[in-house]
Image 1 (cartoon, helix red, strand yellow):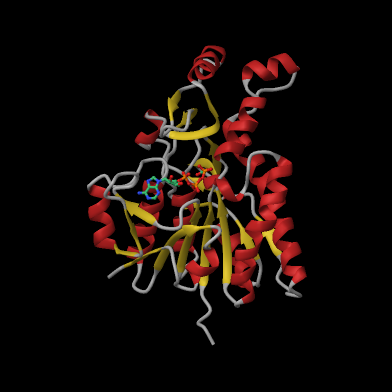
Image 2 (cartoon, helix red, strand yellow; image 1 turned 90 degrees about the horizontal axis):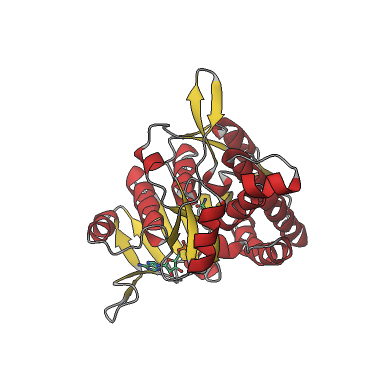
Length: 315
Ligand SMILES: Nc1ncnc2c1ncn2[C@@H]1O[C@H](COP(=O)(O)OP(=O)(O)O)[C@@H](O)[C@H]1O
Ligand SMILES: NC(=O)OP(=O)(O)O
């Protein structure tokens, strides 16, 4: 029998979609590789992104739109919490249904999760995390005029997007809850959208406007739960060096040292592949025996079986 492992899976945007009906349809597909792992007896923790969703929620409840609708403006931490509830609701339902379809008995729970950040993190001075929809340049310029607090940039040839601050996760406030649920046999959905960014003020946790990268928060919860395996599911089957150039080479594996050298050589795009490789390296380097895998949602089953994807190990 295969060794049963503690696995943290991080889901990218393609696992979720952009509108409620699309999300309900896509998460049915997303649930399958997750439940494959549960069926094999692994303990699974699920993290997910929220870039498009948190942007959508925040825009709908922005100062300008809220004033027109006569509703209150919604601060970013609250928008993050709403995105965790909205995405967790759909994921939890789809996974529950797939578990029932296979006659398994594993309860599923979504934990509204706060992630502690350093309020002096220099990331607050330089917004880099793309969120929300993609816009044409003229639309982006019009949005920046309408919303004083908007900064927008061109995102890797795909259109213009709003950028917000993205501090690094320091700790997970609900880690004990996640552990108790996991140890009692639950499949837990946590650190959704990287977690709601908060800082400590005495005994209080205070929300702070930002969006944490879910790849870093998935890595953080994986370390805190003493996981064996971090699996980052995205749109590409493998990681490439010299991506999108004539010398493009898709990698089956990287050691921590090799990946670190590629990072230093600027091989991975910030805001897309770079955080994934950095998270994968951090986890693989954190303890002997830990490994990370980056592959696509569609190839998840083969990747987990060791047939594809890019695996990152200590040596
Ligand atoms: N070196 C690279 N190797 C593979 N893909 C890369 C690389 N650099 C950038 N990418 C791009 O990164 C994308 C995945 O990042 P992103 O779309 O932000 O992921 P997700 O939303 O799944 O978290 C891929 O679809 C690919 O276009
Ligand atoms: N919070 C976050 O990392 O979201 P995306 O994965 O959608 O960018």
